[in-house]
Length: 256
Image (cartoon, rainbow, N blue to C red; front, side):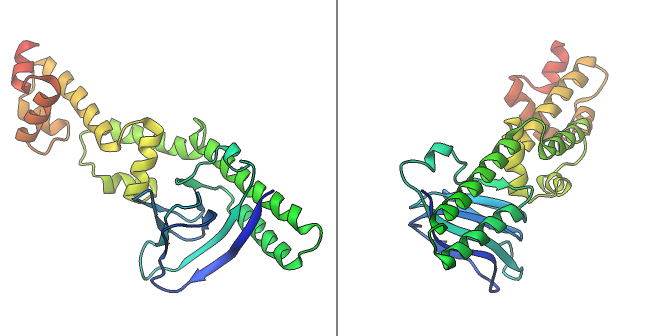
């Protein structure tokens, strides 16, 4: 049986609000209606409206708006379970999960609040069922987020193709993130999750690959190759190239 401790729906917080507790005594489900930051296992994350976070009892809970001047609204519930029923679901704790229809979570939390007020012979079961549905909703969202065919992953694939196709352009993490619609930290986290490489390392690997191809033709100067491949200076290009190939660009050009 799953039981609710305290909960809230569409809670509007005062300006500058930041919630902190070192040892949350219950499981916590947070659903954010506005952009937010949170700290999970000592690492700061940023997310968008519609994202949610699950945390275990005893964990440190820190969250708030991205800016002190921004509005901050969330849905939340503290709950408990027994006989390992929560852990059996293998839930995605301490990670940001995107929910396509966050109103589902808000509706279920609202049902829990109403049943806690009603408190008749059916309330305990209905509360447990509502919490279970919340957890399944989050679990399914995690599976969708990891799926090859999600709209989010498809968007990132398209962006990756664009970045790597235009490898010689002046790419920064800020520019990449702005094209994704996410903050830099969230963009990097999703990119790494989807492709098992950070966006900048992915770009640098592509630049190195193309630099080798250009050098092997034997028609370009080292400085030209550096510029064509997006390196900011010949010095940086030469050091980077030697670090990853064991030879300088000039030596590679001569050997090929």
